[in-house]
Image 1 (tube, rainbow, N blue to C red):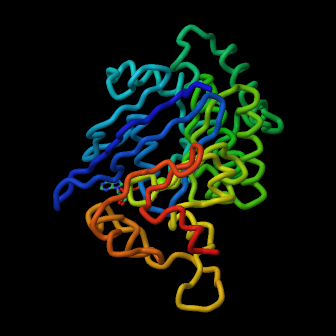
Image 2 (cartoon, protein in one colour):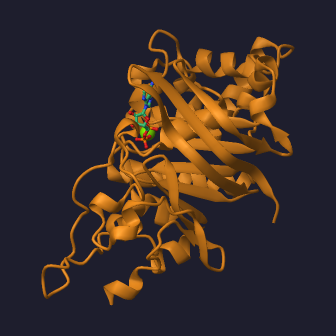
Image 3 (cartoon, rainbow, N blue to C red):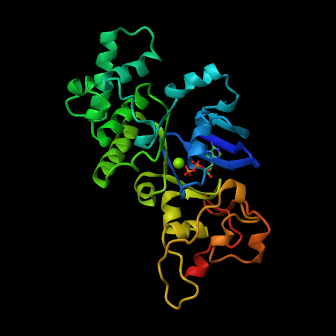
Length: 327
Ligand SMILES: Nc1ncnc2c1ncn2[C@@H]1O[C@H](COP(=O)(O)OP(=O)(O)O)[C@@H](O)[C@H]1O
Ligand SMILES: [Mg+2]
């Protein structure tokens, strides 16, 4: 299976008062055609900055400092701004957590979808675009699409608005859809419906998906492969089944809620204590060591690289696989 997208050595920095900080710091990832890569990690791990880097949408004072983002053999980081605009929407599209992007409140749903389509097809007539927009609404299973076409975003529920966003993202048949916390703002039932929809659309179109979430349940349900991010780096990668069945990095174990309390006889399930260090206050050595129940002195001095510990399954921890300590 060939990879559609390959990210190599990606480092994205922000200029701040205290100097340059790296929000994404040396990330390597790939996404095979037609498959879903789930990216998980607590808030502040660099997931959104990573996806914006792929889209080349990191705003000033941020910039991609080094690395490559190869889509179908072309390094997106080397394209002109005009070529990158073509790629966005025609080959790679992105949807966000609903409140962040929401639709423009002053225009109808139909207007916004047809404008998105017009940007890529300047020759289509108004009637043709309307037909295609209604088709697009049908495709994301919006009931009564002809009526919805003339409605404003506030007349739609959160789930319906996310469906409209997906319709717009898919209007130009992207090869890759990046979904950054697409269901975080939605209630559980609606979340499940949107995830089902994404899965169906992937079956229909063969597109690849990068699904970013802090919710491991969502990843378990949706992803073929998983990358766990911590403090700007990937700390574990592998097939979803393997990562969930045999988590190797202590952070992944913690996310899964299976870190044993070492100070107690019995194995208690608990969440990892503390929080993700911001890029300007990273500890020396392994970035996770201050929170890690398995840390030893060596963890404080050197930053561990990803190591292949099983077929296609990597973790960046000198003590990995830590399941040895958990049993
Ligand atoms: N414009 C910015 N300026 C400075 N730091 C930023 C900026 N945007 C994001 N960051 C920092 O980058 C880190 C990663 O952020 P983000 O990618 O949004 O995390 P996630 O999506 O995993 O919650 C955070 O520590 C955040 O403070
Ligand atoms: Mg985010």
